[in-house]
Image (cartoon, rainbow, N blue to C red; front, side):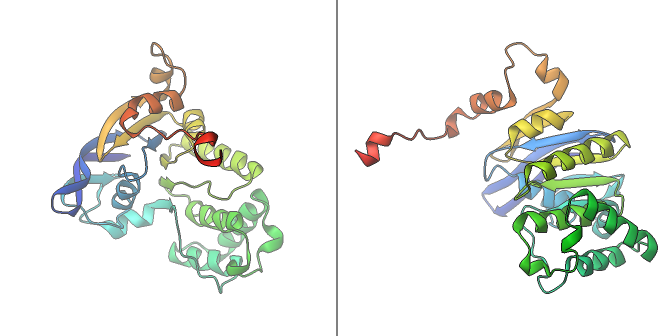
Length: 252
């Protein structure tokens, strides 16, 4: 599980990117973590993964203190970042084998899992291709595979669907749902509110570094006047209301 207490991160002294936030995510939960650009989503994910230090508070992942043992945290998590720098000179197989070595996966098991995910995500014919010569969507499939094939207890996803085609998205959603049933803890950041609403069991909204909502999805859906997560998010963010395009203002 994930436990966060009074987490604060500042990039500049007088402005907190994440401001005294607290929440819990239990084993088997899929938490949709949403907010506008700059709200603090990616900062939160990087801190939880042990990839970024923080100024105040306490963060534990599967009872491991992230500030004291960030390396131990990395051993038990899977992480799909929003933007990743891959080794473009390596083939897909070479990259995944390298990731497998880092996680100490037995060679025979590693080959089996690479073949399984390649078949599942339909990139079997591309395994020998260099990463620099494959599409954005196939790069994303490599990232997802590398994040999952060591069977992590906790999974962090930061806009994981970038570039994926419809079939791959359906496959990915099914994978996440099945992993949650096996007790995996999943922290899912995305701008795709319909996807979050569909697969999440818990929804947290962050705005200007502060948590403005933390509720279970079913409770939210059963609440009075709930229409959709998109409608709720729009109503909660009236101060950052999207601009309206008027054709006549620019083209007439």
